[in-house]
Length: 243
Image (cartoon, rainbow, N blue to C red; front, side, top):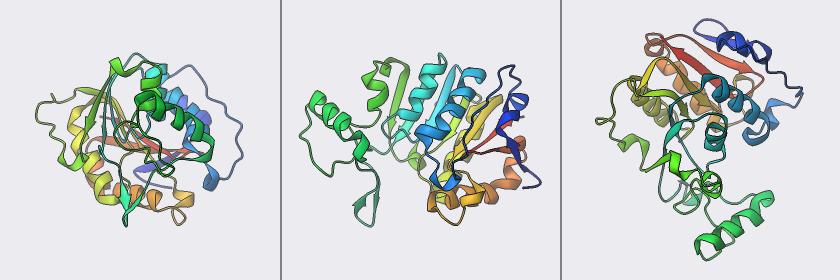
């Protein structure tokens, strides 16, 4: 990988983030089998722990596991955006219930008084952010319910956020929207992160293809705000520090 987007080895992440803490993870798993909640989690936690954002913006809450990494590793207040009634593809729900989380989702449904459905959406109102809500961390979260393309940023000051995570809709147009909308809101020296950026599995996952294609389309414009972007190898994470 050459030019504007560079590859950085995981063991050298501390050099870019100016951290004295090294991150050593022994993980030989194929990137095609990579999981955010298992494999990317320690990297996200490392970033938040060392960057220490005060105000963090996140596109794509789902059940709030990724947001929890930020809340637990630093003292940030977080603004996060999600569709209130979930995402659909060809009329089918996109985010259902995985077998290993079935019991915890059932317990949460019971807790909030929702009638349990075997095909319940987990990215819809009531289940959005359940992980941080279950840990009583909702007092540090401003949950925005809307399509990010309709999100009105006019009342947010420029350079308001210290960090941004783009991990909402993975269609190229949505990634492009979320990136371009949040750049003015990110302060100089702040970090912007994109999830599901992983060149070795580009042909295997539509979400990866959407993110990589968006970055390629925006490359010229992004170079005005970032000296370089860095893909962390191995991971599904891309990031840049704003000039």
